[in-house]
Amino acid sequence: MTLLFEGGNIFKDAEGKPATVRVAKSDVLPTVQWLEGITDLELTDNMLGTTGKKDTSGDLDLAVDVSSTTKADLEGKLLAWVQENIGGEANAKEWIRKSGINVHFKTPIKGDDSNGFVQTDFMFGAQD
Image (cartoon, rainbow, N blue to C red; front, side, top):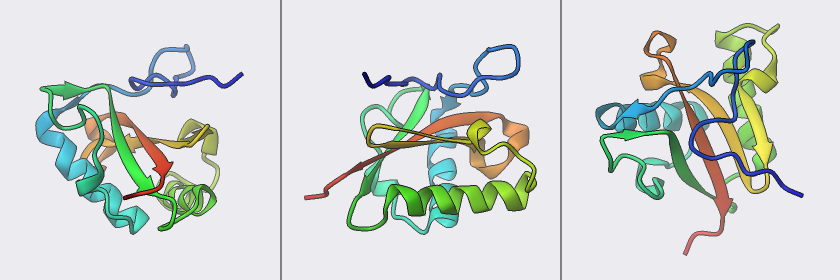
């Protein structure tokens, strides 16, 4: 049985409440561009579903071509960012999770944690 977490509800705080928020449409592109900088992946042209199309999004759904990276490599890049910016003692599960074909990341909105966090779902598949 595979649990599917969508809509930004995979990361919880100590009280079990969502640790991520909905992101404003105007903040989607700057956040995705920031993610490109830490992952070295082309992501702005790979937004899926309603990401960046509605006034707010519960999460960022981004397609990742399996020929460009692996889940393990992406997880390593995200973990390196967490260790450098949050601290080596940070619990990786508070920031990065994997499920099915996805890697989930608790993403600082526009790369700045003072803006809050949005859940990013990196969805691996083959690109046409």
